[in-house]
Length: 355
Image (cartoon, rainbow, N blue to C red):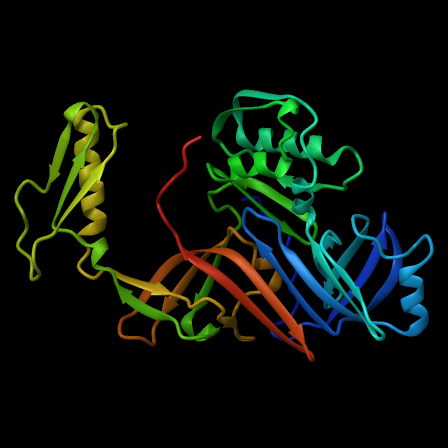
């Protein structure tokens, strides 16, 4: 995932928020403090925001009539935190007008890809996934969507064919790539597109930085005393040849992979898998969904980019442990001057998709 220049914006939980609305790049509502806001960032999908804005009577009328009125499929909302933009999107879903407030629901620029079908034929043979994705996006943009893209090649070559006569949405075609070796996320209106491999630095968090109840679990499914690998053409590898002497009962794991076609590869796969599953203490640290980061957390808002890797450690539970976790989503809620920043982490896996 490409990196994005970050700026220290003060501790989490203490952000001052405002929002402004623009049509075609021209302001129609000057920046003003939000009443409430929900916004986020997502890995490999569009993010949404719901914002409630205080208005007076004349403001409300101006927002509803005239050439600069609020319009779905036209108006953009830009959310600022401490004077710097953290989220940008279009009014694609709903807008509600009340006597004293306007509530808008917006979606970042990736949401447009599910409203536009590909108009050109796309035939890519042995092409980097990032290049294919950029071709889809350029087709969908049609010159009127201001895509700002920070991209790097994925390093994965793929073959894809999408014909204009299929009338496929650009988002559908892009998601096919995002499932097999490519990552995408939007931060403050900038689309980050690149390999799944982390390239933008590692976050470091402790369980004491989280206003939740992190837990350590022991997963017996991730423990074995013998590994059996079944490859193609009847190839079988067993490791270790002689079961070890351990203080717990014997347990086998069988792994099938038809792409393994020689004995040496099968033996190597069995040894690698055994090295992972024979750990003496298969502990796993998890962060409960919905947990908020405390203001003391040593991160700032623009470092919380989905796709980033966090080393999450605990020194206060039954054992000392540190695990790599991937940030897959960020949800921020602002109400009554209080900011809640809730990340979603997933344990870092070792599976790779096939192109």
